[in-house]
Length: 321
Image (cartoon, rainbow, N blue to C red; front, side):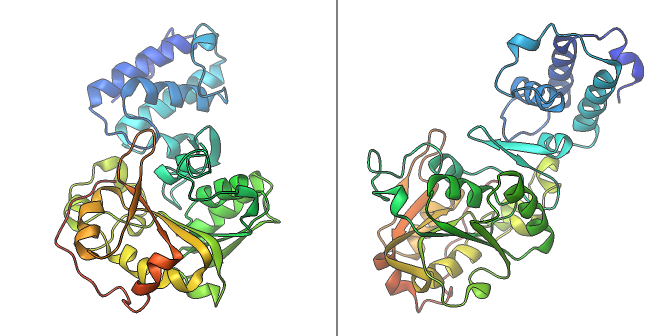
């Protein structure tokens, strides 16, 4: 436990950054909500708490802090260690590919390999070629939108598309609405409360995006404290982690336009998914930091699964948040 004496004499960003790294290393924290080590975590907290650019620490290291700024940093660093809350919940923000989103305990902290793909052009004609013309996409759907981050990134990538976003949680949608307003996309993004496709009627989309719960029961039982601060029903997906994915595969074809496709994240459940659907030709996509954790299926490939109704079962697999 820290005391006020811990930070007596601290006056610069460098002082607090160095202290935070030491405390985080000593506490053996778990990461995975935007950073993966103590140094990056400390830099993110210090910079975001001071509302400075989160990718530029060096220019600010010798900046002198006001008493109020020193008190805020001391409080947040202490809370990170003593409560094990993830950093984005403590500072109220998270980033995907440099895009800032509000973050609090109403929804999962924004993070997704799909977010990278919606930001770096890897789906377009110069890379995977799955979407030949971003401007030609007229409609997109984000299933399980949470904070709204992927819906917002989709609206940015597809400038002419209307984007629908669904979540079963009313409180998550309240947070999503704030993020949509922050990005001034209220005229293009519509939020729906409901279970997967249920509130959408017969609507069809050129692209469906899904980052559903996919953590299996074994991994849920071993979650580090940081991940237990997040909504657990947004992580847990049954014994093998595929309960929600199976339902999406069974229903997606009925909501895609001809030539459309589904982009879905399943973490480390890829082998279990392929074992459950041996006749399906999943196209696995890599991001800068992941391999084989996101798949694409065309509307045509999904059509034979439309009668499956999510009833398939797989061998128990493993997954992590």
